[in-house]
Length: 179
Image (tube, rainbow, N blue to C red; front, top):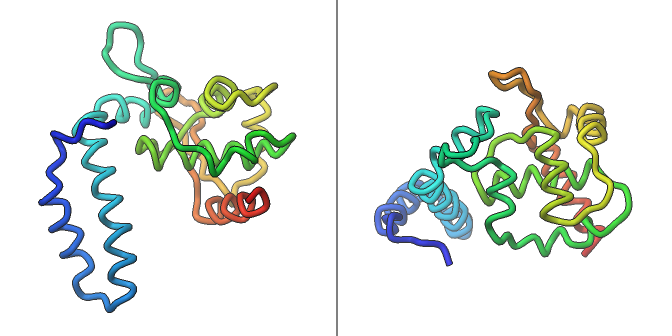
């Protein structure tokens, strides 16, 4: 159970309410829920994970004794509800879709805006037990799909991948095939 003592829920609810006050029902209710979820996630990331997430976003894995977490450590040390992705992760092939799923989970669960191909491959093999995933294959598949991911270089020169809106749409469509 997450520690919520550092999250000021009353203030977050006020911000969410103010953000949607000009909308009409039923859009107001839907938007309120989404805004509230986003604000709570931001508060949790800011209060407990800001230094580790900041270092991961910059492409710098924290070393021993630094007190930070790498993206792999974040995935491995916390439980994640990935039940919606179970069929996808159990299927053969579909490495692009599996990589998109890891990018979405990283963003939604930990506030990670981007991941390197090696991090995606490690998460797939170590967290979700997907067999035979290589960094080079992840790089190849994501490199062939620029419409689904954006690529940026971190200060160290490593490529990092971020999920785009068309990538999210593709992942949603793919997950419907496994439902």
